[in-house]
Image (cartoon, rainbow, N blue to C red; front, side, top):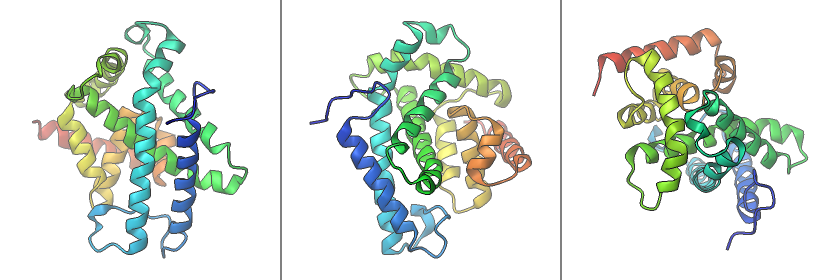
Length: 239
């Protein structure tokens, strides 16, 4: 049983506790690696026990955030904007991203260690981005049962982001594009990985380019280079 939610932007207390615990465990596990700042991917081949433990905990954390997105944000969007407003306001996608960012900050505020918060904020934002991509893929697939309210409230949001993407890429933000973004993101190639992350952060999460550059630890000019290369590939390899 989940504890009741007192803060409409918050997780149930038991989920919040579990997420904070996972964040701390991952922080401690990463400190054991030779290169703690490098991402751990299941496609890297022979993983150490520590790396596998990190992946397990990261997936558990993503599932918590994903569950929150599915259950709480549709209602919060209506509460903030009113019924039907998603199809009327062009800034809905940006406001959605702001809400998600505020949700993450409220979780991290529970920990007094400022250094830990600084190191963890980016990681938590990355997991939320994965959860957000999963949510959009669910909406596009329309395969989950009992999701009529979810689709009704968030499908206009996905449509707005798809229109933004289509203006640049000249193709819709469909399931094939989401799958290609995921393939790039999980690639062993750092360039391919950056291509996927740039598209995800920009077109799914609505992040500005300076923030994307900060998230990836690369120059903003490189962000634009990766974006252009990814979009050109998608234009040529239409499915």
